[in-house]
Image (cartoon, protein in one colour):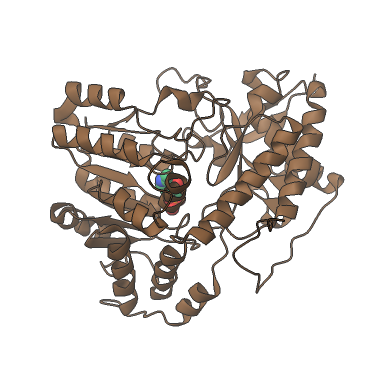
Length: 459
Ligand SMILES: *Cc1c(COP(=O)(O)O)cnc(C)c1O
């Protein structure tokens, strides 16, 4: 008999979590204005609000913390980090930052000007924010297939080469660079193929434009290339990672994702002009060039995390857990963005709460129902997150309305996945009785999802 699959690590340290009663949760979610961001973490049993900064570090990473060099300038921890990044990516210039959006802020301060157009595949919200905040346009060139949640294709995060070519043919003079997000977070943690990265590079070369990878989940992307793309089955993750970055000029990185640290990020590039242009902004916004917003100990843990999470076993354990949850949802017929993404399951709320009109925010309603059911905290990636149209001030109902269940790295077991699946099934089973959603009582003009105050609609 073939041995079943099991995790590639064992557990050395544990943190208790607490269940609650439905009465307690009803009180807490009311006090939180039906917005899960306003819950206290201790009011949550299983926390799937994000996979960012919520992973469990390894014993080697913790050991690395003790060896941190906290020198203001020239710390050995910086050089360890730089060496690791250069070894993995080939990029010679490294600027550390306190997290991914800070890397964007520093680099875009140099690269993005008013009136520019930055084409890419579903820019992440902070990326888009840093482009639009500079009065430039983030032009989405993702393949159309990404919008059909039930369609199963292996690389649903790809850039559409035709859309990209059109953008360059029409606006080449306004385009400072092309950005490719690996994996494509917004489209559901969907990977981008090596073939697609090559096509993007070819178009970029034709118009003499640089290519930037938004790399938060580059290792998960490499895992999908190895397991889904022809010709890569026998390559190591590190070989694939190197081949991916050979097709880029530079990267911004949120180390809170695939480097499995709680806080950290960086810019890395082969272009001296980018480094020279951006480094002054690092000093201005983040800190001196050899720490850029991070402690020495954190840079050590980050370097080790990059090394460990570009090994197949670690990635396989992670992705298989997300797949396991997906299989459980399949048993119950619960619809989600298919196939399962690398870091999360995106449940298609509009296909479940069909009695809740879009004006009453089905995905937010489902998020609240799942919390009430079992103390599980997901996150709405839908009509509330989409904010209002800046001109008409109308809600934007054009995109998908999803409940994201983000799985932290090395934190929960498959028993927790079972609890999540069954809790969601219980809500799913009574979906016909859920006829009303929520309404907005108060909202901020931008990024309203973090602070929005809601109340259930009673009729
Ligand atoms: C998380 C993320 C960012 C921003 O990183 P932070 O560390 O949260 O600031 C940028 N791009 C992508 C694709 C991300 O997932």
